[in-house]
Length: 102
Image 1 (cartoon, rainbow, N blue to C red):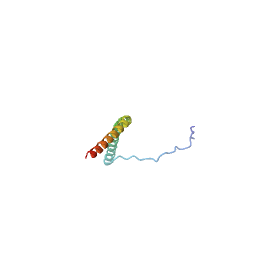
Image 2 (image 1 turned 120 degrees about the horizontal axis):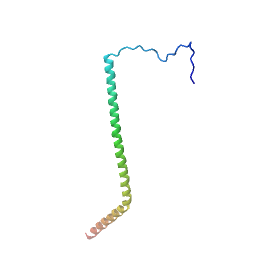
Image 3 (image 1 turned 90 degrees about the vertical axis):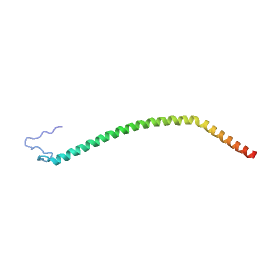
Image 4 (image 1 turned 30 degrees about the horizontal axis):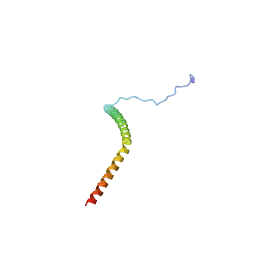
């Protein structure tokens, strides 16, 4: 599993050597501005997720209520159709009677 390196092998460099130089004030300000922007984006993202979660909960409640209302309408639809047909026939009869009287 582990490869034993021989004593004569020089260590392998994984990355080129980086010479450190001090960060200028402008570079530091830029870095801090980017960090601030990133923090704002994460905060807005969290807020949007919260709003989306609340909206999803509201949508579930509305879907459930809609299903209940559809069920009620299915139960009453035949009766409403009968009432509408009866009213239509009554109006038609009344109209015919009023024509015959004239």
